Image (cartoon, rainbow, N blue to C red):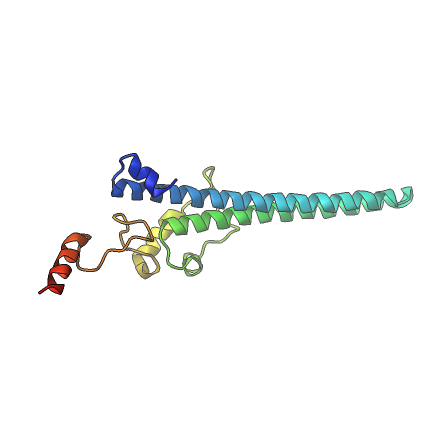
Length: 185
């Protein structure tokens, strides 16, 4: 959607900026979900290739060695499944943490992560994909180390392409008029 289309629909500048802000949040959430799904797909494909190779190797084994090989592969597959579950949990954890820190306007996600001290092994992810207790920790950190967060209110202008000269309060018409008058004095 383009800004011109929204203007044609009769939306005010403030409404247009609100639409773009909401759209941006939706896009970021979908990017995080997409990244998580790509990681899961990649890991699943890698596991399938590994198991196909194992099956081919099994075809070459004689019956006497087969039992030992099967037990060995069962253990290896169990370890791979545990590793896969750990990687999925880590991916979900990092996605949830990054989304929460972006939503909280953290200036440097890496620094805030270190200050929060959240442990992947003890963190619980709820059914919404959020880390339980994270918002409380972020708010506590915002209270003690507020410099880590952007506190500017961008509600009046969410577009990175909007320019408002300082001291005008957003009213550039009077500024332009006075500048033109000063040129012809």
